[in-house]
Length: 326
Length: 303
Image 1: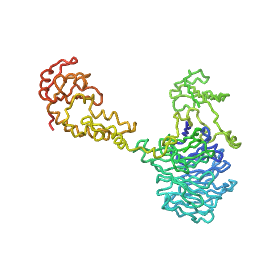
Image 2: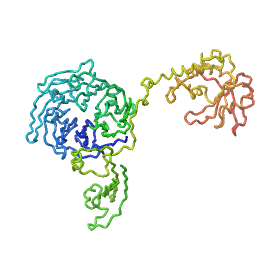
Image 3: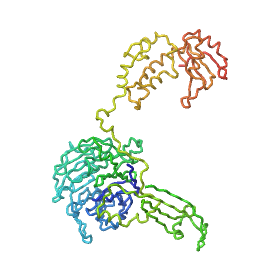
Image 4: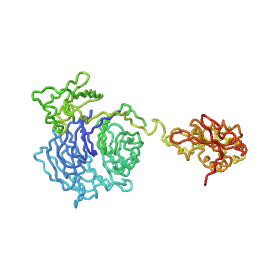
């Protein structure tokens, strides 16, 4: 396959997300300008101007009209997807790390980093149907986990919130009361900070990537460890294929160590694993730095990767990918 | 998508405003942008070929016509929903509004990227693990290992033969180049070709190391130094020249490791001292390859 290279960002990529139909690709980078691309040919549709810091995460409503972004400038912003105008800005007292719309787009979960005297928090905001009625009040605020919470997503039927972060523990919270329902076992869980978390297409399980050079597959309700995928480098990003029993894992050594070794030793490739057999299927090379973000197109026929090198690489799979036999 | 870029400076046209090229400053090219014809978009035609013609001032203040020809291919299986088709027509916003045709934010990789399989499809995982190169050599050696001195099979290499010193070193053991390189250049067939084996771990390497020290001590006795050799002279030539005087145990021509050119001197070791002496007497001052050879006893090294 010949990937499409998109060089819209001047700084490392942080997050990639497709909309539900898979025709738009949203990219976040440390250069404060989230960008939307046409996912088929990589043409840039527009940029969302207004943030003033690294944008860490974003999410798109189901009807692709509303975009929420979380940024290190201590705000999370709502945007009109079509015009790029800012609709609302939630202000926090510390950088925002993760955002996620609930099923139905009535709520959004937002996590904030520990900063100065503030500890990290998970906050739930209501998203008003009419933007003029939008308020910044939190329905629920959860404090407790130590360190950054790198991802927080909604569980099935919005009954739970799953969070994972620097303390390497995955927690399932009750989205009504804010109480911990389940915690991943230290023994079987990750040993180092969890960098990424991505749900499967049907939302029944999710994958976590960690600096301990592994990615793990968990059941979203029981939090039982299903599978483990081991690589040679810290995992920065992971995604589950919606079409085949594949997972893709991206990473590479930390950016600060890149100059000390040759790029071959860096292992900056997106690695495909068989989801069930846990066997490596193959690697897709191309980035000149660690992969920070990965996303599968919802149709499963293409995927994109964003790297520390500032490029988004959009790969449309060759036909033979779909007939790979293990 | 094929992109062709044709850049040709246009001659300055007589403009009603009579702006001279000298008045154009480099910095404010945008200021004079109104002088430029508006960009023209031709197509896309039925083949999907689109032509965009833009004009701009380059750094030298010349008017430049930039023609960008691109072809849009329809992607297979591009089944878009109604909403997605609608979104396709959305106007650009943000930074994407003033997209210059030339800046190429989106490119198709020139490199073909394949999904690199960790092993050949269909093979078992166990096969893929590379067997220890040394073990393979040893195993293959068990069959192939035939000592050339005592003709014993599978026990030791020629170089490690316990009867090595008893056997008379004959000229037929001689090869062009140092002995260790032969065994290294032709690895045992069982060894995986393409795997790098450090010189120290190659077959025969240890033997070469073991041998070199006692050899040198022994060779120093009847060693003859030959200097003023021509660049073309190689070890077989020297052997040819000196073998008439008696059995020879070693011939060596110093070769520059970087350039591979002979450094113009070499050593010949005779089995008997008398032969060496005769060779010196006969060949010192001998005209060889348009040069006068200088042949003398090799002085043993200080250490």
